[in-house]
Length: 344
Image (tube, rainbow, N blue to C red; front, side):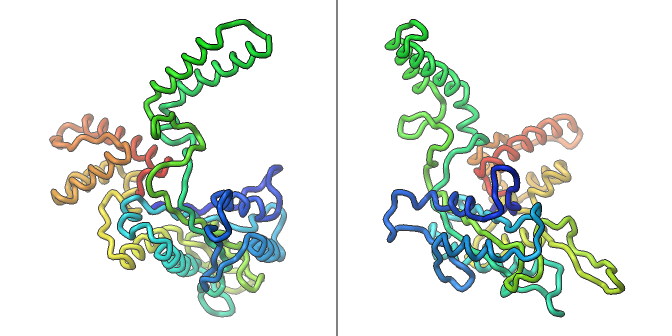
């Protein structure tokens, strides 16, 4: 499970409305009949059209400054193993969305009218998507890039020849393009993978739009707070503040395992990713110290994500070899996380 929380993008290319983001999330509904559309839904399970979502989020921004985010985007990316476990069931993903949003509310260290923030205070709309396209950070795009660059250059040259700006053999250049497309290392059904192309296999994920303000349009609830969970004296009163992301991410993972009886491997856990960043040696020690069956699965998951990790048998005295191995693992895992190919 890989979850991100992102504030609304602000700048010259973005207005003060959620409309651009809603339009982006509607891309999967293009060229589909209304009956086949994936609709937005809220915590009560009601379906909403894009116009209603825009109107409700945009009108819930009282007293927010121009440079403050009006909403946050939460993206929930289950791994292929997790999606396989729940048989890529849309209804189960919807039920899981409701569960984690209750934990989202609990992660706020805030009081509203003398009580802890709860799900009834959170205004959100979610949407399940089943398609995903290749991004520039994906391994296939990175490794196809040199071939793509040459193809683009050849196509530009063909256009110049056709317009009379230069001379050359168009047929020969077309043959070169065809050869480059065949030589590219990554293809789908014989076609070279390029940025924006739809990915194969199960790609279901969840997008959630969360209003910065609570349901009453009175209180600001920001998951982007730099404070984890603390209290501060303000005007002689003790005020709670902060949002505990660690708590939210950890609970989201635990809820999936509990809700769907999923047996999570060490390398799939949020805590293992944190350990990798904070203490690679300890991560490595935990990895090679797993029981045989779990360790075999861990290396299989890493390998499937494109992380080249030899099953180690390294004496503790060979410190430099351990460091070198860990560096390779960490680089591979980081790239896998960026491309969304592993849920750690």
